[in-house]
Length: 295
Ligand code: NAP
Image (cartoon, rainbow, N blue to C red):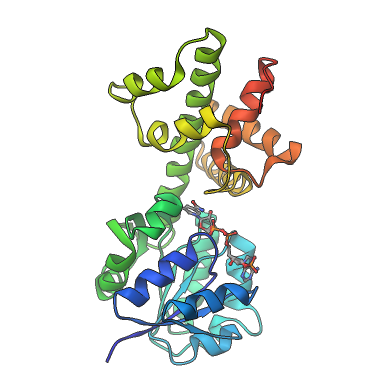
């Protein structure tokens, strides 16, 4: 008999991940705060649950994919949340990106209630979610990790246990630092190239073949050239993540000067009303800094 998975949060990432779990043969019961998205899962062969209680009732594995630490806290510990309704022994995989200290704390609460928690944030964007090709950085117990490897395999390609509870979120914070820094420098390079009237398509092509090449350049370069910033990964979520990494670095006594500067630029873009753009929309603020506001 196939295992039943409760999937909570069917947004840009959650819906395609849940669909891939259906394709892999799991019974998937999805809950979304706005019900229309759960109906989309139904069309793909999953089941739509009207409440979290209904979704997690008897489920073997519970996955959460919601925006921020307070959201995961609500969904887990709220009166009608997971802890109130999940069966003892169920695995709880949190794919959301949240604060490492909160992840550690919530894992302890879940374990106390008899659940098997894994913090498992992902990287790879909407395309990675659609293609089942996510990188997944997992914190938790080795035995629990091994027991749900088939679930991870259905949604990801590079899946690594990086340490005990909370470690997955620490690695994800480093991931977001690296990605934001890359986007910022790519945006600066594009504004620079345009100022010199260089053929930017050709420029990005040759840059992509050398040491300056990166997945960020491959996936975000054309979006900047086209001023096409449909999300993808919303800037307001990256703003949340820069808050996570700057706070965690400060807590650890680690200085991240460039990361902090980029965090300010991301914050400024969001404050200007552009938080709904893809994170490549950081470009808009880089343009403004040079008085070249074409976007
Ligand atoms: P999203 O499209 O905004 O989806 C978030 C989902 O969570 C929506 O279904 C939303 O329901 C639900 N939700 C929000 N607050 C909730 C609450 N308090 N209680 C219950 N449900 C709630 O976001 P996303 O892009 O999928 O991102 C989800 C997580 O993955 C975030 O932590 C993000 O940082 C991370 N992530 C995103 C990407 C990416 O490229 N997008 C890549 C890697 C990691 P409604 O439909 O009702 O709003």
